[in-house]
Structure formats: C-alpha cells, structure tokens
Image 1 (tube, rainbow, N blue to C red):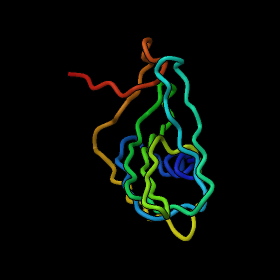
Image 2 (image 1 turned 90 degrees about the vertical axis):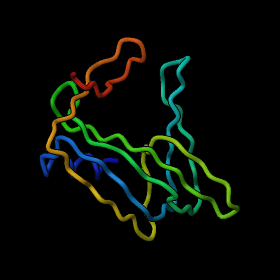
Image 3 (image 1 turned 135 degrees about the vertical axis):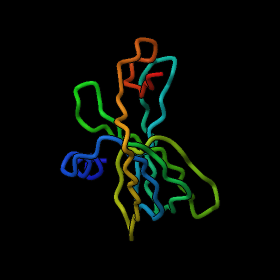
Image 4 (image 1 turned 180 degrees about the horizontal axis):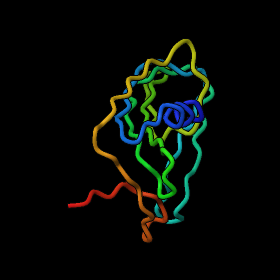
Amino acid sequence: MDCLSRFAREQHVEAAQITGIGAFEKVVLKYFDWGDREYLDNRVNEQVEVASLIGDVALAPDGAPSVHVHLVVGRRDGSAMAGHLGSGHVRPTLELIVTESPAHLRKVHDAESGLALIRLQT
C-alpha cells in the first residue's frame, strides 16, 4: 500500500479506480470489525494468486490522496481469503491499472463507523 499511496501522491491522482492481477509471496489482509470499530490483520505467509483486486483513490479529509483496495487471493489448495489490502510482498508480479476519473472523490469522517468514507453530493 505504501507504493500505491506514494504513486497517487507523486502523480497527483485525486480520483481513480484501481484493478489488478498478479501474485503475492506474503500479504496482510485487513478485516474491519464493526463491533470494535477497528481493523484486524489476517496474515497470509504463503504464495497466493490475486483472484480479484479492486479499489479506489479519493481525497482524504486532509486533502491527500487516500488509496482503498479490496483483495481476494487464492491459495494452492483452492481456498480463498479476502479483505482490505494492508501490505504485501509481490512475487513475481502485480499488474495494476489505475483509471483516473475527471470527478474529484472526497472522503469525510463518518461518526458512526469512525472511518473516512466517500460521500457523493447530490
């Protein structure tokens, strides 16, 4: 996630969709526990294939680009794990497509969840 966040900052990406395929040698998936209002780590310490990677870039309340990625990985035995992408070590490759949007997406603090969430103005 550090690389994606740095890319968004350096390229001045304010609104985008991210998709990807590839593999990780190890990855941390995060699960949001609604009751405790916190993210829990699920560490995957084995080679996995990316079955689905989708996310977005939006501006955080402080105006900085915020990257939010969901990931499904497949294990050798055919089982899958999913969650928010926390961090990972890519091996051998991770091919990402970042599609910028002409609209600016902005996140605002949501009191109920404690998270910064995208709010669309109507």
